[in-house]
Length: 234
Image (cartoon, rainbow, N blue to C red):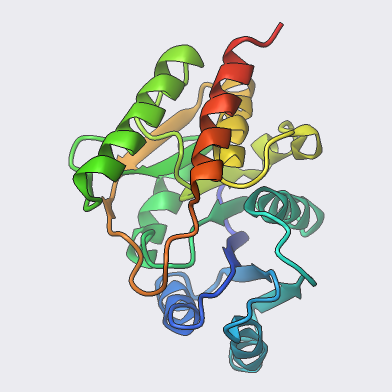
């Protein structure tokens, strides 16, 4: 089935410096896509910028939540929105330019042959400009997910992902226990159990263009405990 109707999603919290150029680049790469942004009441004014952008981009929709409610719940909301809207594909990405919009056409091209695709730092030809300690942490998390959970991809923790509608309806995202960044691990585990038509393609991952990283030590710990919980599942 050809992919014609596409929803691109990102979640924002304090992304005032990034969100306007990001949306501009997304619509430059995919002029016929629709876009959904979920903002968690960003104190830096991201929500107000988004409200202004809605008037400029008719294909942009914004959901404002009253408080910081977690990355996982925002992604669950995007899946529900994609299914309810009858989209052929959902593409998810971060809002800080670590996932550059120039890869969106390649993402959709990959989805023509796959149910799920991820932009990968660790596929041959990919790269990541993290410092040594954070790169080691990321590598370790991905190796553990690949080994313990038998996920047949080198990249398992990024949010730069594409899903066919047929897959979304199988994931039962409402039952995913993880929130925050650990949602990425549990959701790709669900994907790997629902389909073998998974693929990845190389991207250059560049740490955020502006603002501060939101990955805390607590989120890192939750990610590893999620890995263990899924590995030890009955």
